[in-house]
Image (cartoon, rainbow, N blue to C red; front, side, top):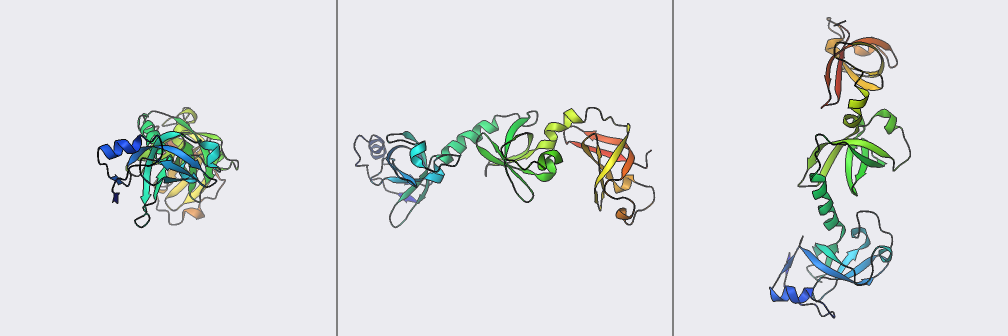
Length: 264
């Protein structure tokens, strides 16, 4: 939606004069300079150069939660505000400081060498299939399968974890993190392809068994268990069984190790 420009009537406003000079028409997702002219418990009033003051909800002030706008802002604070919405009837404008900061933070994230860089981010809260991770004030997601079990068991929040980015979607500003890729090179350096090791069964799936060697989870695919066809893998093994296995594949880039019994 686009609204016609009505120059601000607030005193000492230069933003309105600039907008009026160029006959600017305000629309959604514009970023305009503004000045805080009022503070309430739930919102702030912003002069962005229009006749009507814009509304800045407290949840749009900062990437971190703000309970009271008066603790984060002050009268005459000047910043850049993104137009979130425009009410067609009242022409009330809702703006955001947080979204502008997020855009800048995202630009910094894109400067990271994702392939070779290990970052340390904060475990904020668990979800059913993973965890929300905080980095540079932005929220990312990591699957539980991408986090070592030792860290998944920790109940406390806000502790640092090493991660690597595995996927970044610029358009919708979503990133996926993997902690296993970050810790894998250090813990797997003693595991060599062709080596034989004792392992413990940690989980059994229809396609194979996951075993633990020196704290590293490795896959024993069903095709690497026996030369004979296996109809029910659960009838052969149970969680906690000790198996002697041979490493047949190792990838630092993928954070994967495959083992075999039949090649012993």
